[in-house]
Length: 147
Image (cartoon, rainbow, N blue to C red; front, side, top):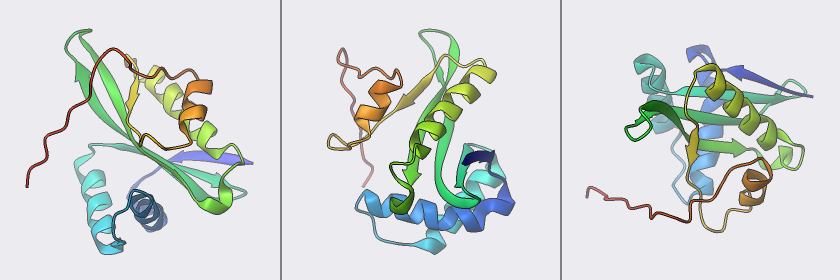
């Protein structure tokens, strides 16, 4: 059974290894101290909403949403920036539960919707599309990196 909770600062010790494994998945070096600082900052500044999935009472995954706005629609939106499920808990529907919870949260907050970005080769794309997410094929995504 999967249960979702909204994380608070008391959950930071549970989130640290999840965030660290997520970063490793995206070819970053392990750095649990930096993960702790990052999570503490998010909690202190209240600038994201983090949800933890528990499978049979064990931490199994998380997702993190950031608030933003759409000037075109004049509505708030959420950016689903992070979604990660531990390897041993994959293929148990946890990612789907996290995504659906994020959609429900978005509706409760009266947001226009959710945006997400993922790697071109991420197999989770099939899950996103099955759950009603639409791939943007009408515009390009650009990023400027400060160095």
